[in-house]
Image (spheres, rainbow, N blue to C red):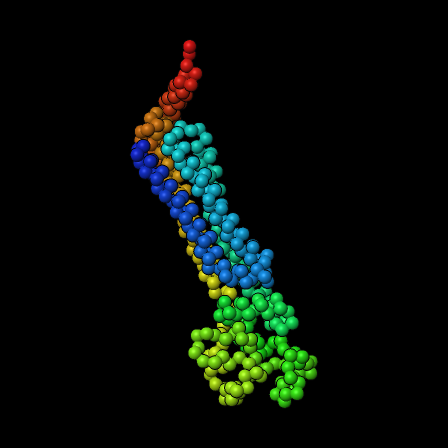
Length: 337
């Protein structure tokens, strides 16, 4: 039993093929836009993270590029198949090849959602690891030049301060007594038994340029403004970046992840339309062959078999005409002397 039966002429099949080509181009463009948008959105963040989690960065980019390349192969094969279905409707392997192409294309489109799920899980794990890594970096800020350079660059370029919040610099011991004046009464009050101090000091890279006022980041050295700390002025927090670096990293990556989801959903939706239209084009071309006129009308069916009036009896006519066509081609290629 057939469902959704349509009739297409040769021109109708040509227009159907044009719509299919347009959908394939739209799929390819969406895949390229997905890769370009995700790359541009996350490039600055990824360049900073590659020094900390290089393997994770390569994995995220690799998954996105793999999906885009899969859609490119699907597009290339689809253009060739559509041309064959239009020009050679009597092609005996059309059903098999088109079925394989539709299945693989659908799997590639569905794989986009798996790529999104994998990127989402990887990003979630990355944020947890990044918070721990940045806390280690803060504790080694004055002893490891690599961490100092990375944290200063990250805090300046991403307009952030600390790991989860700016107060991380006040809670994680990163200043040893070796860097301070031990004869200072203030330093001795802040010093712990382990030789480390926890003063409300932040690096200069935490200062924000958006506030037209001095940056109050170091009460130990900025002694001329010490009354500002004693009065707990709002300028203390206003002169520093207000968000942590984990959140600054998460924001662009979340936008890239949302774009990845939207693009892949559109690609999958277009693939469903491609499946439907390819089925109509294939069955209409076969129906025209069974009627004995490859360039005439052909009945297309979306589900089930072709209607009875285009099957058994006319198949013999189509076979006869196909044999005649092959004989003509053979005689043209090998003329008798």
